[in-house]
Amino acid sequence: MRTLRIFILIVALAGAAAAQSPDNVLLILNEASPISLEIGQYYAQKRGIPAQNILRIKAVLTEEISREDFSRQIEAPIAAWLTRNSAQDRILYFVLTKGIPLRVQGTSGENGTIASVDSELTMLYAKLLGIQVPLPGRINNPYYLKDGVIANARSFSHQSFEIYLVSRLDGYTAADIRGLIDRGFAPSKEGKILLDQKSSSNGKGDDLLQAAADWMRANGFGDRVVLDSGSAVLKDMQGVLGYYSWGSNDPAIKIRHFGLGFVPGALAGMFVSSDGRTLTEPPATWNLGTWEDRTTHFGGSPQSIAGDLIRDGVTGVAGHVAEPYLEYTIHPNILFPAYLSGSNLIESYYLAMPCLSWQTIVVGDPLCAPFRTNSVGALAIDKGIDPATELPGYFSDRRLRLVAAPPIRAGATDQDVTRMLIRAEVRLAKQNFAGAQQDLEDATAKDKRQANAQFLLASIYEQNKEYEKAEARYRLALEANPDHALALNNLAYSLAVRRKTPKEALPMAEKAYKLTNGNPSVGDTLGWIHHLMGSNEKANELLEAAARGAAQNAEIQLHWAIVCADLGQNLQAAAALDRALKLDPALASTEEVKQLRAKLKISP
Image 1 (spheres, rainbow, N blue to C red):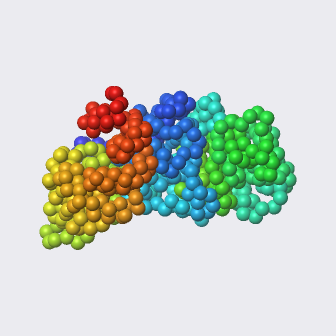
Image 2 (cartoon, rainbow, N blue to C red):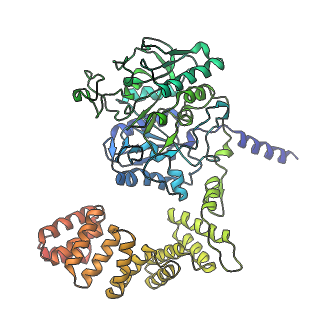
Image 3 (cartoon, rainbow, N blue to C red):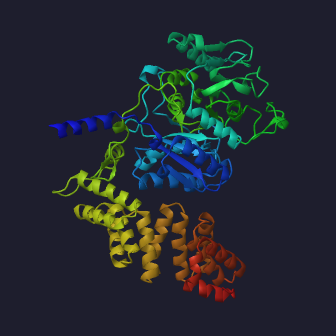
């Protein structure tokens, strides 16, 4: 029985192993930013982040990013990495580095679309599951400890929560950020919590600060809390483990630095609506000001900046890239009690954060946990791959619940088809096209009414240049769903270009264009069909709009160039051709480009 006893011991130890480790961190660098690479390398070495858990993306070098670029340059590469590495459950925390944008452009207000990059990324788990996340407004944070009862706080894992926790390593300079990292690696348990109420009365925020002080006094930390309820400003104090104030929203606060001696591991926050608007260092002469006096604005606001607290020595801080509204800021009555009770840095902030897909950023090492006494078991984080779907276990369970196949003929079960379809999606994402094809063929053999499965199978056949098979599957997809826009588009293109029957293709392309509200790729198909039918004026109208809407698509630029040349618009044709070749230099060897160059009298 010795072998059995050893096996049981190994299993028990695996289940009880400490988790929430560097293996659960995805470190994200912007390879276009030297400081991002520098900070990422420093943190990876300090924390022992596995090399395979470091993702390099290429994003714009601005603190604000468009919604389109956010989706393409930041969100999509992270989603692809998680899928490729079957890491949807194992990764708990995204750690962004300085050089990755702070804010996604959008409209302001409670139903606006502006948000922090960090907060938008928290929703990626749900998006990967196929859940539609509304763009306007905020999303309730499922991890938020709404009742404020610290005994109810749980260690974070995907066994219970369908989000990611996101923090960043940021500050004014590389030296500031390295200091932040060093302090998070060796935090102190000692120090006072300073809570500075507003000098002029304010109910909600001051009530939260009072509640934080009350909890600490009731739970053995009374000698460590300093609550100022008067007009004084808490400053020139040493041994500070926590700090929360109104910042520049307090009429008594006129300065940026308070002379506070923060200990390693110190957390901070402010009730300030724009303290995370920038982490670019202001001039040394800049000071807090008023909204009316625009000469006092920096980064578009006269308010406090969280970067000053990082410079002064905090280890973690929250900030806001735009107006969060007071009730949706970090709640100090949860933040500090959670931290003192054993939650790590990132858990403490997110337990105290009411909303996601909103305005908050959290700066700091998520693994900083000076008071941690226990940890969630490894099996609660990642229970392994479900062989039926080839997805991580918790993620697979949720995906199966969300993807419900319609009733099918006798002899097969809904779950059989569902698992095949999910496994096919996974295999496609990992470029296992042969495996995906087999799953899709098996699924559609059991239920031909699976429109998306027919479409995906057609796409694989088309990639393999099995065009007749592809067209047959597109038609089956349309039998199951006559409004399947992508099947309409792809079949129309195949009929027009390969079958040379553009008249047959035209109604399908027109319907697809209408269904997709003028999607540029579908507009390209429709415009090209008009070109093939000799209607170059209509083709030009459609292709110009498509080229502007899909500026990174080389084929659309080339199509527009060809039509412009046919219309005698040689300058526009040459410019569009130049854009196409910059996007995809391989096009230069195609017959279309050779003919177009000859027509425009452009030498290779």
